[in-house]
Image (cartoon, rainbow, N blue to C red; front, side, top):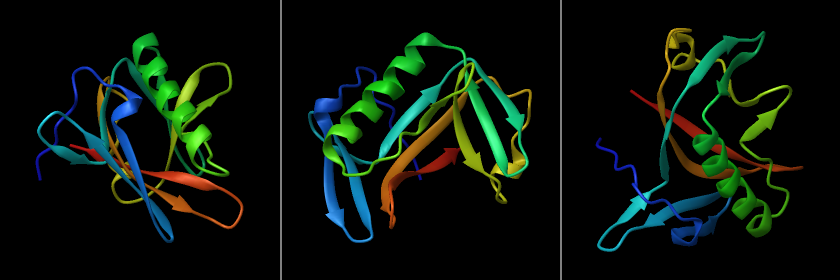
Length: 132
C-alpha cells in the first residue's frame, strides 16, 4: 500500500466519522481523500520501556504538528487521550508488538499513520501504524 504525506498539513482538512467502536479518520486534499493521517516524524530518539517504546521527538515543527492534531481531536472527540506525551521531553508511546519490536535505537526518522481512534470505556485513543 502506498501512502501520501501532505506537504502543507492543516487540521481543517481532517474528517472524522463515528463507526463504533471507532472514529474513522480521513484527510481531504484538493482532488483525493486519504485514509488516516500520515506523518513524517523527524529527529526521533527510540527508547525501549518495560511495555513498549517511547519515540522522543526533538524537532519543534514535528511537535507543533502533532500538538495541533491532538488539540483538534480534544475539541472534537469526547474523552480523547492525546498521542503526544511529555515528561522532560515530548514523546509518542507505542506498545510492544511484533512490529514495534523491530524498531532500532538508531532510527532518526519515522513515518506513521494515524488510521482511526478507538473508543474505549473511559477514553478514546489513536491507533497508530508504523510505516516502513
